[in-house]
Amino acid sequence: MNKTIRSAIKVFTVTVFVTFIATNKENWVYKLLDLLGMDNEIGKKTILSALITLLVVILSAVISVIHDKFSVLTQKMELQIDIKTPDTTAKVLTFHPVKKEYQKQHINIEILLKPKGKITNAIIKKLGIRLEIYFNPEILDVYYCDKWDSQTIESFELKQRTILIDLFKQVKISGQEFNGKPHTLNEKFILKPIRIKDANTTLDYMIVSSLGPIVAKFASKMLLDVSSKKKIKIICKEMIS
Image: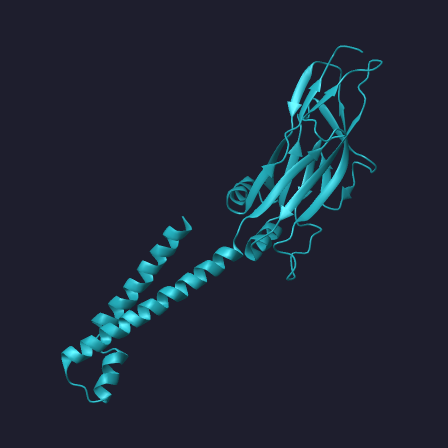
């Protein structure tokens, strides 16, 4: 796709440039040749053709450099979600009631950011892009492990049983060392089913923005490359142990 765009820009720019130079007999090339005393039309056209060829090569190279630089500045940021359970290999958290109540279980949410493009980073920060992580709110309550639920902890916020992570809220995106290095956001949470019943849910996530769903959709498609390292399934058993 990038190669196609670059080729189209090249063809358009070069075509306009060549058309303007070749069809304008009052251009600076002819004027310069007239000042040098050249009256031969064939000679003038030959020199003009050679000059156009040289300028086309130079212009194509300049366009390629500008495009490559812009591509680097607008590379997507990689975002990896890792939900760690007490058993680091487990992909399922199962809740069994004990004395008619479920026991709490702990998880650690780790977000790995790999920023690449400076322009992309600035847009993400400006648009207030956040990652929303949630389980089915009808099944699970979510709490901070050691803080009040109303608190906003660095980049993490609990809101209506949903975990919101502001990707760059507490991260300075300036400086030479920011791009190309991974940055980690993590926080511990407690999960507990709301009531005793057979039910199940799976970790899910989506990109959101303070400016609305259209902006979030744009960011998800154009600015971020999101992946989940491990899917966590929650199973609630009604049977009392």
